[in-house]
Length: 256
Image (cartoon, rainbow, N blue to C red; front, side, top):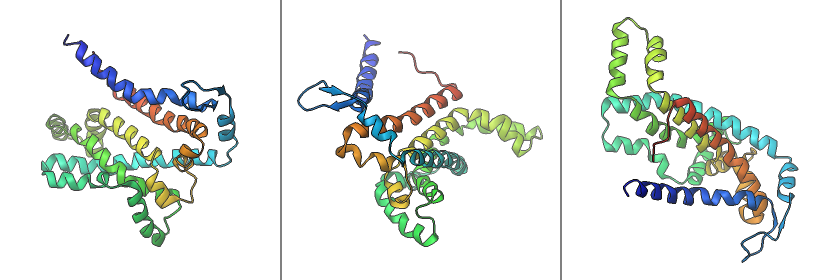
């Protein structure tokens, strides 16, 4: 009985999370699906053909990929010293609140607020501006993921390596990075996913730059079939990134 309860809870969570995703392929190929019918009346490739004929799609995918990769890499680099300092200082709750404050703000509001400054700095409607805007949300998540990795055990191993005359680069390569492998892999995957699907700041700061979320969101109500096809494109890279991060970090799923 004790083993059935966790299975039931996990099964319910998977049904809630994965269930809607299973309908996307059906919606993507449903040329006609009128309520209250549970099954589409007619299947076809209209949505796929319209997406493939969209001249902005290749540029939007390329821009979203470049911005997401750059944001993930820069986000981990920026969050690394912040996470390390928070561990060393045993930061109080107020400091943590400031660190994660951007996560409490609506992305669209942040995007519009940043646009005012980015227009003055010449960064609006540019890939560099989009990376900087996405970092507002990616860095706090990376800090939250990286912080638990800087354990006392890791710091003791770094101290031992320093006493053995290891320079900073040697300690980072031989001790710190291997000890932080899981956290870094997860932070990169999470940073990529957040940036890839970022709509609010992409609209506010880079409204003139084709981005995949900017193509997808307006079609959710206007044309659900085309939106479902784009949704499959949107969710594929984050799932791949999470799978790679799990494999690279050596994290095994918990036994049930």
